[in-house]
Image 1 (cartoon, one colour):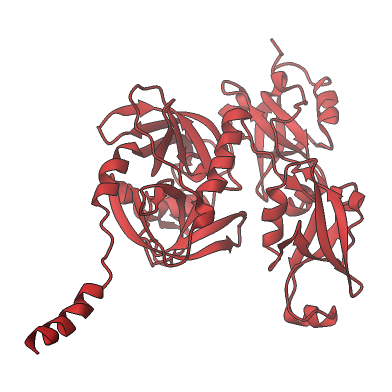
Image 2: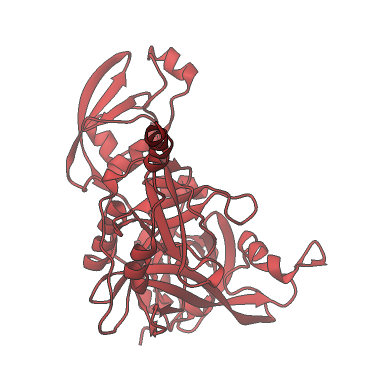
Length: 460
């Protein structure tokens, strides 16, 4: 009797699940996880950047204020250069010295320093970065580099244990763990990434670090947190490693990421819209506008169409469509299941290439201005609220344009008093300007406009 009671008491204790032990994983993986520190020089006014509303801005808040109220490129007189530093994480995924991290960790960095677990410090070169997926690839020159094994993020399940290694607040090789809270999350400004949501503690400095499964394989890159305090609140998001590796390979091989494009403006299907279209439930992506001359126009898509599937994959929400099309190679056909006038039909469309992809063909006499430019498409003009301009895609490092703060991605709207309509027109305008003349240039940087004085070179 006593033996039976003992078994009855002991059995439940033996059946209790064991919590995972991450010690072996950390021992094997930590050497390939790196700390990344960057620095860049920013021009700062001695008055306006330190004051807001006439009050001195505390040092701890200055980065927030400077980001929300950026000073014009080149700026006003009495400016001085101050280094701005940032910290992040990354990991070595190739013995040749290739490192994966987040694009925002190394954005606009003048210098990138990588520190390994064995305390080696190495200068890193930026191979390429893709802001749409927030993936960047660095390259260091060193021997005997450890690497991490990459897993398969398609096999992840909600509730699965995961761990992160990174440098939160600069504390190197900190380890945190938790579970996968959800998969295929779409965030409002990041429609190209099906994020992994976890409750792993992630803080500033963890960005770019690896997310591991229990087999020690990298299944994601820690990228973002949702917070109201600036710190960990139990909502962290990682880029699936399958998505990150595809981007990284393109950056290594081509220097840029090619993604598909339909040329349509879309919106969610609300419950009321679904009812008005005769749909049983609110789903799909409603086409609000089709850009003239775009792949969507050529394929026969129309405003009012609701895209329900892409090659048999369900479009459960409008944010799913950009990711599915973006993953399609330009030039490939996609079969779109479309609801039109109450009838469901299949429309085949040849996907184009996203307009700002690729190294681009430059024009605009970059030798004289120290820049290279590309045309703007109609969608970019609408987004920026302008009706003309050319996008700057390259800035000569030693040129006057770089010296006054012009960056790739800026839009040159006006040269002197004349609007700039195209690269060809810009080149023709420059032929009429004498050497070494300073001309006022109107720039648009993500919707904000600034004037700078740009000196025309002689082309030597």
